[in-house]
Image (tube, rainbow, N blue to C red; front, side, top):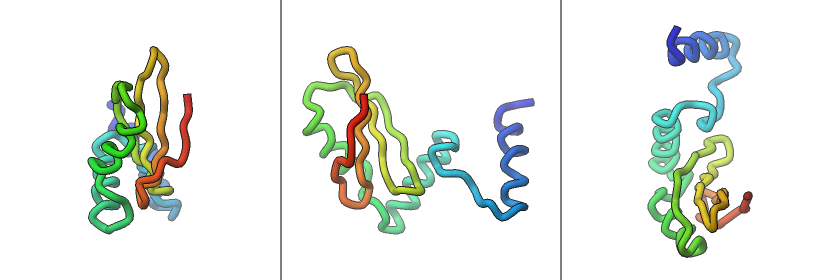
Length: 103
């Protein structure tokens, strides 16, 4: 059984039970991107390009590795590597302000 089919089989009963869909971060990259785009079009978050530029000013020479969007909190989590260490930067998608750092 493919992962997507298994994933759909697990999620289908949740909709039937009225529990709703999981947070975008629990979905695949395409679903996560779609959730971020919907949030931006609905005016709930700033465009990702603006947020990424703001964070890059703070990260200096760190290398960008990727990002996640957490729909339930309208937060982005950007992943960088600096001096051989992975650094996660949490950003409030509404304001673009850095909400926290994790290593």
